Image (cartoon, rainbow over all chains, first blue to last red; front, side, top):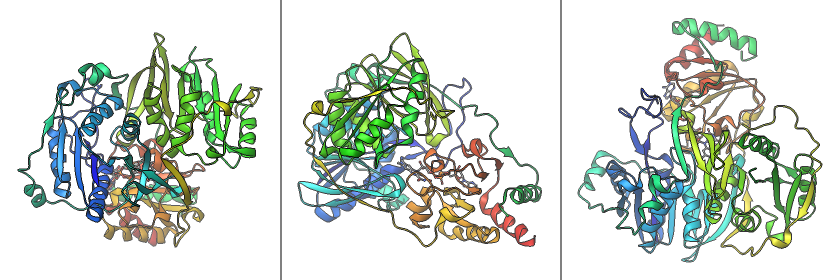
Length: 262
Length: 325
Ligand SMILES: Cc1cc2nc3c(=O)[nH]c(=O)nc-3n(C[C@H](O)[C@H](O)[C@H](O)COP(=O)(O)OP(=O)(O)OC[C@H]3O[C@@H](n4cnc5c(N)ncnc54)[C@H](O)[C@@H]3O)c2cc1C
């Protein structure tokens, strides 16, 4: 099975305290720690496991700047066979549709049976997989938490729905699946693993390599645009308990007693 | 005036809560705008839902077909391409069905797409819809513009557009049967069955007090710190999703939209950031205590009491003090 997994480099929500810049319209990006989008690691792990069972290859692709190469290398250290970086100044400011269009032109140049994405990334939009499927005119399933290869024409997949229930379906290949966390346990990648793939060639492709009209992607083609970032004023919020840890605990115990917690 | 349509999820003849939220959202897109409800399904259940919607919607479109008995987004997307007029604004809920349906629909309708919208701020110049979203797990919000000149597909976050009062039940609407316009319903993804989530060793929905741990617990070996606190409080340990993904606790202990819905009296959120999928499982207005080492964690916006501390140090001390009582 030839599998392409779309991955993204994102600010790590577990490692950062997000602050706005001095103009108050963007994140202060100077000291942000970036990593692979959490959902994408599950997608790459699943792709590797499928190829281990039925043969084939795994390609990881990302739309991003040159720094995104590091995450492709990380996923290759996990076991992906190939990586491709889709990068061009003209891609900047793309909305979800723009990103999907860029990925589609890369997918068209290959011969893939299965395309995977993470269920969502940093923007929480969960959009690229479904858009890709519609552009490629192939079936789609989102939030997939189980994949069984039935034969070379179809898969049996589980989607995680409300309450943790699982919706089982049969889906024809080629198709696009967005992968939910928990489907597997992504393997650990150490420094040594990354070193092993440090010299592998990762091709970089821009708009002209992909045959893309520059006006159709990037800021020029985007119908949906982020104007600014802000921290909402949500009224009072929590009563913050302050003082030494002992003092805080004393206050907390009183409150818990009053509210039936103790 | 914007032409707005909303897809209404339902099960067993009852419309989802979001049915009352779309008209509120539409009013924020454009004051006075009316919304047409679209329901798909089959038989008596569908008729019942369609009829019930006429109290909140002037126009209800129903599409009845046996192939629509189970809401397979792949089929419903095809139907909607024949029902939603070009240039309209189409609303769906940002739930697991909406996530399956909506992004692809925007491509098929050649419309703009905005996901998980939490607020609308009107339309500028006839074609620029201003809206609000969140990014990075709710850590920051963003203002977004959406060019609706060739229509838009928009998913709204469930719950945020809930009507303040019991909605005025007087739309006096009518149901139009458009089953004949559904078109070709053949798809390449066939629904097989629902596998229900397994019950676990404890039922977290039965406990009045939950000590809930998130990624801040940092390692499996630390779960016992939470168990000791729970024991001292006569409470039960629950958790956020990453703890289940890592297999440190059973799925039945997960609070959230893809886990359990709980209604405790007291909820101790320990090292949980406060994503909307997590909070979606927390009902009944509990007293929320949040302990987080990040003073900007979104959980502090919804908690009653907030404490900025390292849970790995704070929980054992709290346990000791409670034991001394
Ligand atoms: C379709 C879908 C369904 C989902 N369903 C659910 C669901 O049902 N339930 C659910 O929980 N999630 C669900 N999620 C995932 C959700 O989006 C979040 O990723 C998740 O809730 C984050 O969990 P968390 O708060 O534990 O982790 P994080 O967001 O990583 O937060 C960890 C917090 O711990 C704090 N912290 C770290 N170390 C310490 C320490 N030593 N002391 C104190 N604080 C510390 C950090 O400051 C941070 O605020 C779903 C996602 C999707 C896409």
